Length: 264
Ligand SMILES: NC(=O)c1ccc[n+]([C@@H]2O[C@H](COP(=O)([O-])OP(=O)(O)OC[C@H]3O[C@@H](n4cnc5c(N)ncnc54)[C@H](O)[C@@H]3O)[C@@H](O)[C@H]2O)c1
Picture 1 (tube, rainbow, N blue to C red):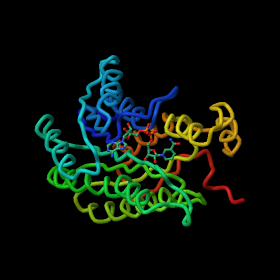
Picture 2: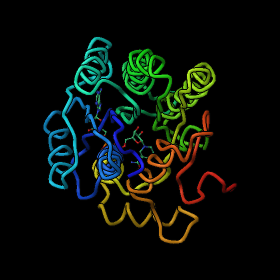
Picture 3: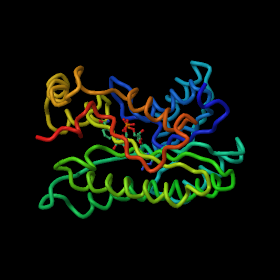
Picture 4: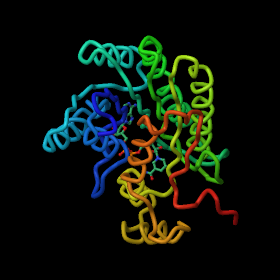
C-alpha cells in the first residue's frame, strides 16, 4: 500500500483499443492497488470508464473525469473537481502523447506539428499549471511526465521526438522551480513497449501484421525477453510516485530494456 490515502490523477488513463494494456491504464490500476484514489482523466470517456470499472472490480477507488488536455479550462475544472471531491491532489501523471501525422522535416505538415505539440507539450503545461497551486498549498506533490526514449535517441518522427524533448525540459524546470515547495517532478522514458498504442496503431499504419511487428520490435531490445509491457512503466511510476523516491526529482528515467544505452 505504497500510495495509501493518496489522490492521483492519471491524465490519459483510458487507452487505445487493443489486445494488451496501455501505460495509462496500467498506472491507474497499479496506483489503485497500492491504495490511491485515482482520477482517470481522458478525452475518451468510454475508455476512461473501462479503466474505472476494472479498478472497481478489484475493490479499488477510481472516478472518471472528462478532459481534453488541449483545453486549459477543462484542465482547471478537472483539478478543481478533484480537490472538491477529495480535498487534495498528490500525484499528477501526464500520460497523454500522440504522434499523429508525424514525419521527417520535408514531409511533416504545419498542422501535424502543431497538433503534436499542442497535445504533448501544451497539454502537460495546462495540467501542471492548475495542479501546482494545489500541491504548493499542500507543500507536497509528485508530477510524472510520460516522455519517450525517442527524446534522447535517433528517431525519424521529428515532432514526436522534439515534443518529448520539450517535455523533458519542462520536467527539469518543474523540478527545480518547485523543489522548495516539497514537490517532485520526474519523467519516465518508455522504450519499445507492447501496448496497443504502439502495436495496433503502428501495424495498421505500416500495413504489417501484428506478429511481424512484435517480432521486429522484440529483436531491437538488448535485454533478453523483447519488448516491455505497460506494467514495466507502471512499476517505475509507482516507485517515483511513492515516498521511496522522496529524494528523487528532475530525473529522466528510461524504461527500455537497455535500448537507450546502446550505441550502434
Ligand atoms: N506505448 C509505447 O510503446 C510508448 C513508448 C514510448 C512512450 N510512450 C508514451 O506513453 C504514453 C501513452 O501510452 P499509452 O500506452 O497509455 O497510450 P494510449 O494511447 O493507450 O493511452 C493514451 C490515452 O490518452 C488519451 N488522449 C489522447 N489525446 C488526448 C487529449 N487531447 N486529451 C486527453 N486525453 C487524450 C487517449 O484517449 C488514450 O486513452 C504517451 O505519452 C506515449 O508517448 C509510449
